[in-house]
Length: 226
Ligand code: TIU
Image (cartoon, rainbow, N blue to C red; front, side, top):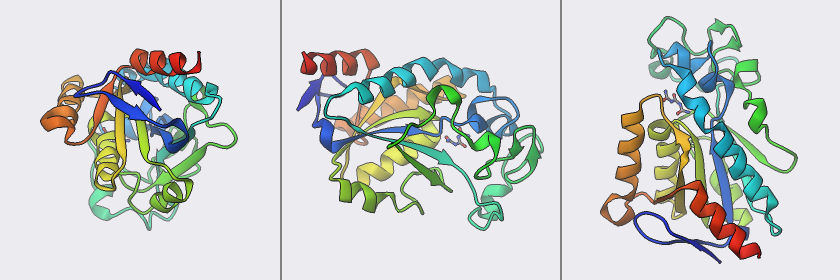
């Protein structure tokens, strides 16, 4: 069992029963010309966490007992049959889900923009979950797979903090998973929204889960190996 200082209290997890969840670190959100930019955002803000997420992946992979690693991608089928019109109608600067953009069709599965950025590319054995919603459990079949694997705890990173990360964490919380969000491995287009999300996760005794910095997790996992 690994224990680390976290907010609002110590977080404990058994690595073989824990998955590292990297939410939507895909070109659509981090590079110009994708969905994030089509929504009117400055996508460069999100690039700051790439080194921290890479470290987190290395930490999980370096573990002798090996933690399950899963990556999600927000994506839709080419015929958009899984994209409600209420979602497609959103957007700020003209391009909508399914429209052709500089990285292929916006937020469509298999297009260049839908790929996870090369610096964080999944490796063999890691799960890649394509999700049509903001939350990772909605219409993905993920819950059955996690149950079959005996997973009890989830460590979250990725983007954006208040949208897909928080939605996924809330879905996980309702399903009984112990959740830890790594503060410096998640980012938002809106710094104030990130901070507000971190506070609302840990408020009320950890109503959604726990948060900690990467350094605290790293120290706890390194000590455990020594
Ligand atoms: N717009 C925004 O902040 N986020 C999303 O649309 N999706 C994810 O958070 N992945």
